[in-house]
Image (cartoon, rainbow, N blue to C red):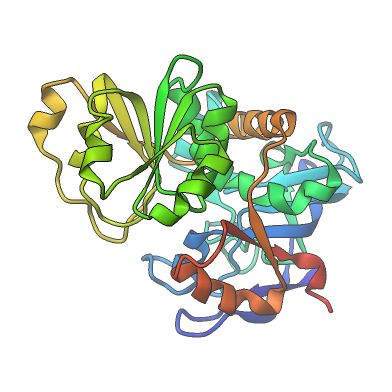
Length: 349
């Protein structure tokens, strides 16, 4: 089928309306009429060719919420009319150890929702800035939030799982002191989730002006990281720190806040490397620096169910499809609280 999308044919060209095709529904496929699609910072990098390997035409978008329009003959988990989501993954090898454990996000054959290899035209996946998508049932997620929250659910498919997965893996919960570095698209979700998990949550920000916002998002305490006295007051006290900042910065200042055997996990992806940490800051307290990337399909479903149970959504600002370039410009300046979401229903207007 031919549908409308928002994409670009070259990195130097602005995103604009274009026509794309979607494959016919196969036996295990689910066709979804897209209602909302979240805007992720990685969309901008990919569309503008700032990451190596962008394939054009590029239609970004991997925070998809919509309604099932058609299912293949062998599909049992979804039916026409269901509210569903699609995140960052639309395929994987389905037979490696990672796939067998529900960790498709670490499969060497993982196929991203856009810019991933596929047999469908044009030879790579096209994302959620579009009216519809066809996805194998394995990678389609159930949404149980109320319908009036659907727009704010969309960013959970990336920002939500990117923060939920490390918090869960490293045991955030009652009796644990958890830090969240950065209060933005990822960080604001980290605060909400860590609070709902029952941890004592400390937000780190470079801006005094974000103190009230962080408390409202679920932080028990807020530390302005430029204030050495505030930082020193928390020395050697954290079980876990989730670092969401996507810009190079001094990791040692935060490593010093971890207790023995504490871990700081990086989920922000800066364009250039962080300064190398002081090895003695690691070895003297058996501290660790780790990384984490989204989550597998079972864990993403778990995250969505957890968020529905606890009334958690992303803080969003809605845009029309024709406002995408303005949204990108604002996103580069950090001028959004905290995620943009595109109303796909406006695509054909």
